[in-house]
Amino acid sequence: MTPRSDTLTAPSPATPLPGTPAAPSVEARILGLLLPHHRTTGPGTCDPGAHPEQLRQIRRFTGAGLPVLFTLPGFPCKSPNPAKVLGHLPDEGERLSLAFLDRLCARIGEIYEPGARMLICSDGHIFGDLINVPDAHIDAYGDALRDLIHDLGLRHLETFDMRHVHGDADHDTKRALVTEAYAPSTDSLRAQVRTDEETARLYRGITRFLVEDTAGFTGTRSALQRECRSRAYGVIARSRAWGDLIADCHPHCVRLSIHPQRPGAAKFGIRLLDSADAWATPWHTAVLRQPGGEARLMRRADAEKLGRLVLRDGRPSHFEAVA
Image 1 (tube, one colour):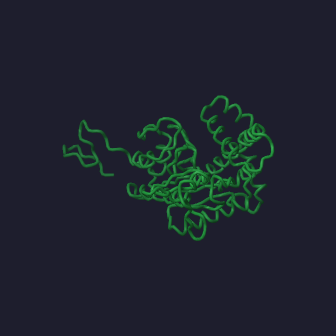
Image 2 (cartoon, one colour; image 1 turned 30 degrees about the vertical axis):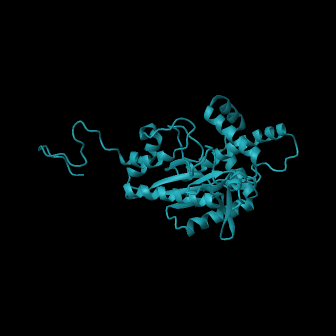
Image 3 (spheres, helix red, strand yellow; image 1 turned 45 degrees about the vertical axis):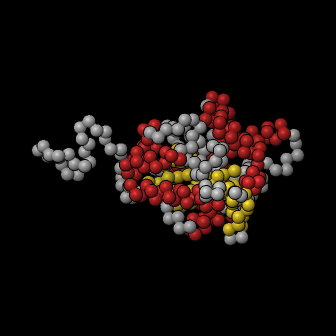
């Protein structure tokens, strides 16, 4: 950095004129690219200053001149409910979401030369037994996801899943080891649900998903809800365990979430595609493309009433609205 001279000179382009606001930092500019896609349960804000934790996380990289690393737990597997999704493999929802994330990283590279990369941390195996999805389907989904990233040339994206953890142990053993090492107790989660609205909202949302995704239950509706409320605590505990494991493996990262997050939270909730439901994800829905090309997430049963099924490479991909 060139030392400043005491000689009075015209201000450089990087020096604001007296009385003019300072130019935003590179951290604020990077965060500004994410803010239009913030997934939050409350009022959103376009002010980067409302997210000091994310500014701090980004500054770890910009201060060292390194590429910004984002970690995103998600892309676990498809819902087991055929009324919600087109099958157990990735489709247009994942294709569009991955392309969006890669494009976001590319835009960061336009304003910050070292650029950015995104680590997709597929969390299907950590709670697959609780959501009644077989490990073979989760493996197939993960393999197809990596193929999609490769085939689309999404060079800013990488993947991480349970197969990178604890060597050659089977999935049940890996789940037990990660849960034992990182998961909070059910009692502590119950206390948080009673006292913290964000945790309570997450608990209600996951319970709703579990009820919707459970097929072949022979008991009463109330019995199903009780059973799903119990499983919801397990899903939250293991999800937090997975998040803490990621943080240990990648301690310096910008932590993203597919769940809504309030401004100021340690994680930044990010919306992948448009949906009327703040909790909707590509793995719980199908894509309906509007006549103008807009893609919306909705239940398969609803989308097929509004459009025709489109195949890609012989597999169901999405629906196109009938004009």
